[in-house]
Length: 214
Image (cartoon, rainbow, N blue to C red):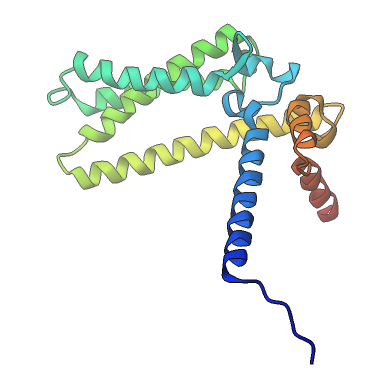
């Protein structure tokens, strides 16, 4: 009977550690490949220039890097500016709704002009700050207010993100590359990094799956 070679415990342990390190390295490489999208959240494409602003070589998403800071600052300012314990919650609600109606500028296509888009993000998130304090002042019950806050802002985030996701999809669909992201110049930095690090083109695999489903 032939003897089957076996690895000693030290060798097996080294193999496991190497495998774990390799998995971590490749996973981290995938994360690094998406670095161009971390700040901009949009492809590096002229069609999406109105959605971003630039600081030197970096591209930033207008909605996230202008909208969210405005919301946080507005929440703090309103806390010190208004007597939230005595003010009528109805006032907070309608102020919030009023500011957030600026969202209608998007379907009207007025936000194709970047200054208008930035102004809209500022107004919309000021409205979000008013609704934030409305949700927390509507009753004296912490649990009720918390559930109202979670429910309200989950719906708002869901609707806004769904609208913007569809907008991105529609823009790519109307492009000459027609959702063929694996050859889209807007993702070339990502593709180049994947090639340099021997990583598969995830965008190509997504398109293959979509083509198979069609």
